[in-house]
Image 1: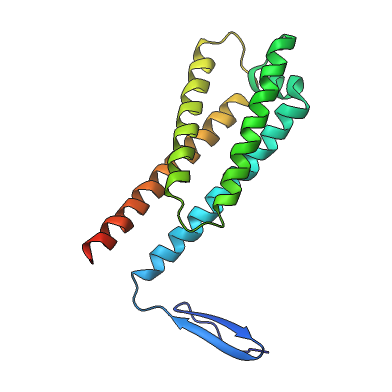
Image 2: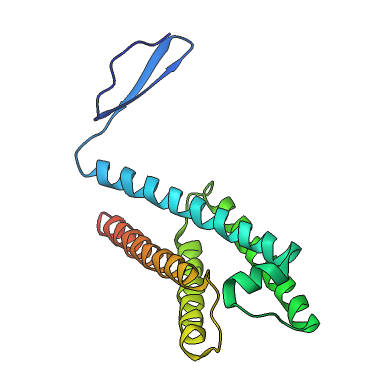
Length: 168
C-alpha cells in the first residue's frame, strides 16, 4: 500500500505497492489540467441533463411539455416532441462519449451551437408565447450557462492549438 503524502504538484498512484509519480514540469501545466477537468465535468453534466430531458420527452411528453411551456399540444405535437426527445437523448449520449475521447473541439462547437440556438428560441418563446411553464426560465438559464461554458472551452482549445503550432 502506498502511504506517500500527496503534494499539489505531484500526481501519484500506487501500482502493486510500487509508487509511480509524474511531477508537473512547470506551473503552466496546472491550469491546463484543471481546465481539462472542468471541460470533462461540463460534458458529463450537460450529457446527463440532456439524456434525462430526452427520456422525459420521449416517455412522458405531455407532462414534460406542460412543465416547460405551460400548455398542452395536439397528438401530432406530442409525436414531434417524442422525436425531439430522441434527438436530446442522442445528443446526450454523444456528449457522454466525448468525455472518453482526446479531441473535444468539434463536440464543443456542436454543443455550443445547440445550446445557444436553443436558448435563443426559448427566450423568444418566453416573450412571444401566451403561456410559460415553470421550467422554461430554468431551462433558458441552463442552456445559456452551457453555451457560455462551451464557448470558453472552444477558446481555450484554440489557444492550445495555436500555441502548439508555434512550437513547430
